[in-house]
Structure formats: structure tokens, C-alpha cells
Length: 372
Image: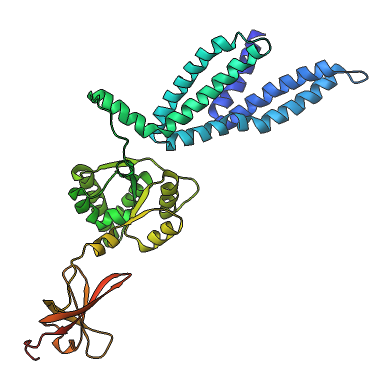
């Protein structure tokens, strides 16, 4: 009999171990619910139906319920919790656990006086208060995670001075997309110290860079490798903290969409050079830092009647117009400049206009330029 029972248990457990966890839990839940159902059926049995029939019916119903509903109480909540914990920042997770411990301690201290209440309040009020205290502890500590970590850092460094509340700028987080990293100008900007807060590079942006670096197209492959090199230099030489974080969201699939969703959820800035991403994010209320707009804003401005040398490289749209470019790429339209094509001449700036693409100057040739 013992050998038979051992073989029966082994024949049931071995398939559960080798199969998927969800199916194994379904079978275990089915058996437990079947036994419970059979027991309930035996208790509720009434003539003329026999106890065996009642037990069989309730056992089958219990097995069906256990087979269907077990994953909703076991594997699926565990999978959801695992996903939430994996996506949660380390600071928030650590402070949430700290808040849980603090809340349970407060609940335990309050349970002593609450246990003196008359029955039945003394039986369930302490438990409810402990649950509420634990929840509030998690909530408060998670929301103030940056302040708590800064307080711990100050205590460890021995700084006993009363610190002023950190400004929004010092707490700001900046999400970078792939275009900014490949562009490379962020490295020079970060070296100057003009970038504030913390630069965050999500894991899916890094994976996209790696995918581009593995492309068969040499141009895209070189761009991907350049992006990885820029990112490595940025982490080493930047005056601002740069972190590669394992952030993701299941509500979007495309990289740009994920960045916009994360920026909204984290109340973070989004740094990009992509014009379309800039407009999409701005329409959804995300604060955007566009490197191209910064470049246009800091370009040196030429004043009217200022004389500069420029090479005429192309014909303009209008008759007899010539087009040249400054060192920073700003277009200069030279009236009556077509005849100086492929030559460097002196021109006098007449006016400047601002467009969505940047500044554009109009000029006329100087009188002392040699005729072609």
C-alpha cells in the first residue's frame, strides 16, 4: 500500500515539475478544489440523492473551478508583481520597503492600546489600522524617495547643516532618444555644465543603438557605433550624472512612443533632435529639449551692413540670386550673386529672417569685388 501511494504521488508530482508552472498550478488547484468540493458535497447531501453522488458532483464542479481560476490567484498576480518590481526604479523600491517596515512598526505600536477596546472592536480594529499604516508608509516613502536618499547621503557625509529644499532644476530628469546620442553635440554641451539634472538612457534606447550598430548597411552601422562611443564618453566626461536605466512601458511598442509615455509618467524632460518627435511630445504636454533649437538660438547674429566673406555655392530661387553658407550652416542669399558662382566674395548683410529651420540672411555683393 505504501509503495502504491508513493508511486501515485510521484506520478503526479513528476509531470507537474517537468511541465510549465501555470499548468502545474492548474492541476494542483484542480485537485485541491475537487477535494474541497467533495467534502462540501458530503456535508450538504440530502435524500433521496446519496452522499457519493453529491460528493461526485461537487467534486467535479470544484475541479473545474480550480482548473480555470487557479492562475488568476497564483501565477498571473505573481507575473504582474514581477513586472512592476522590475520596472520600478531602485530608489522607489528601496523606500517602499522602508515605508512598509515603518508602517508595520507603527501599526504594531498602535495595536496595544487598540486591543483594549471592547469586543468585537478589539479583534479587528488593530488589524485594519496596521494595514492602513503599512499602505500609508509605502505611499509616503515612495513619493519622497529622492528627498530620503538625499537625506541619507547628507547624514553619511556628516553634513549637519539644514539644507534648503532642492530646486526643480536639480531634481529634473532628462530622457534621451537615439537621435541625440548619434548626433553627438550633447557631449560638448554636457562638458560645459549647461545640462542640469540627471540624464537617463532607457534600456530600449541602448538596445536600439546596438541594433543599428549591427546593421548590414555601412552608413547605419557607423552611426550606431558612433552613438555607442558618444554614450561611453558621455558617462565618463560629462559634468552631469548619466544613468542607463531599465525603464519600459507596455502601453507602447515604438521607441519614440515609449519615450513620450515615460516622460509623461515620470514628469521628465525629453531631449531629441527629431522634429516629428518634438512636435508629438509637445502636443502631449511633454517638455522637450531640442538640440537643434538650442543650436539655432546660440548662433552668432550678423547685423545689417556687416561685411563678411562667403563662397557662392549654388543658384538661388529667384533670378540672378546666389546662395552661400556660413561655417555653422546658416544660409545666405546674395542678390545678384549668380555671376560669382563657385567664388568667394565679400557681401554686405542687408536683413535677417527667422524660419522654423533657423536663421537666414540676405546680402548684396560689395562694390569692390572683381567682376567675373
